[in-house]
Length: 503
Image (cartoon, rainbow, N blue to C red; front, side):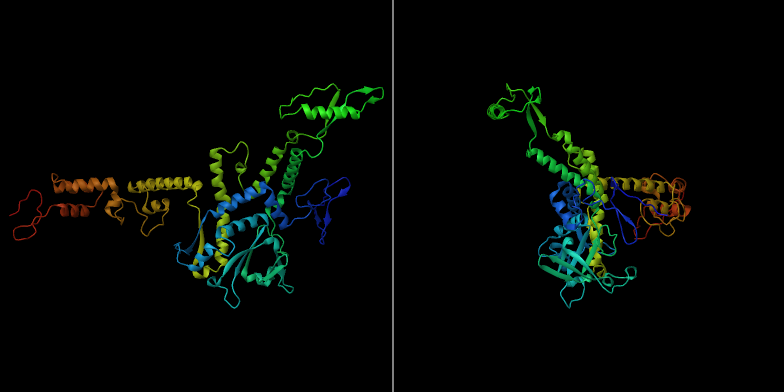
């Protein structure tokens, strides 16, 4: 059992049914009450571009995202090793100017703008006829204008969910700008739709479609403010307060002329005029419209703008206000805008370009970095300090014999090693003695071994009891540590045991 509902004013129902008997409610219906849609009753990519170019509350957040995406360092690297490739002439050419009209930064900027405004963007790589579809044969890289690009589907196409590639469904893309028209085969195009829910058209829609009411209210506020500031229409009327037996008495033509001349000549706020009007004619003023304060346009503007920023994922604290933003909020939200929106968008575009340009087959990929961005530096410094503290803590725990070698390696971000499940004091531990003892222990060991006032037997016992060495290791160290002298025959003098004299 389904639910049937209707939304409307009075007895007029504002819905229609599709071929499957589903109720459809169209919010952009031009006859829907007194609501004036910013889409004028119809959503289109051209309409969205018009809004982007004319409404600052739409331009600002999208520009904020696109500008930050272009601040990334876009570079070609080897797959796996991440080594930067600087001598690839084809990439260097694209990175400099993907086409004769745009720089690479402008290409990326427009990609982001098209994605949010139109809900679609189209990469097109121009490869001359009879050349293979390979990276080295790409002459130029373009963005097709979504508002002028349509999809020509195949008439005998495979069922949608049986298709394995775009060529099974799309015959070609049509770019038509005024009297110019060009058909482009799908293997040279990468189409990305932001909200792609209609498989029949393969067209996405802008997320700002959900902001139809807020955007419409913004336009209404701007029109109202413009009307008030430019004084279009009378603000009010001057009426006679005199009455007779029949009621109010109209001002005579003579009274009107005297009042107008007197007000224009003597009263006003400029040229030394008197700001207070004094007249002998009993009059009153009736105001026709509301003032800007009473309309509360700034509150409505902020509410509508906040909705737009929220849809785009831009922090509300970045909305320009007369109060501005606090340093802490601004800095925190700047990092948030990079981490949650700009960086993911840049990485997604880099991944798409890597595949589209055919770089995978060459063992290459496009990488974008943001480690140079000032807003992210504090996070990197904090992460480095935290990692240093973690490394020092677990290294100390290992050196004191509280955890195994592998436990230490895992905690500091390294991989386990074979035979690493041992403690530093374990006889099976393959670590050099200096690592087992640590810096302080190693220094103490050197002092003991180099002290000539301590007998070899005492040194040996100290190494066993204090430093935890085996008897064999302690014996080797004390024997090797005793100074060796050469006799007159250049023979090495054998060390003697304590209490015995050599012959």
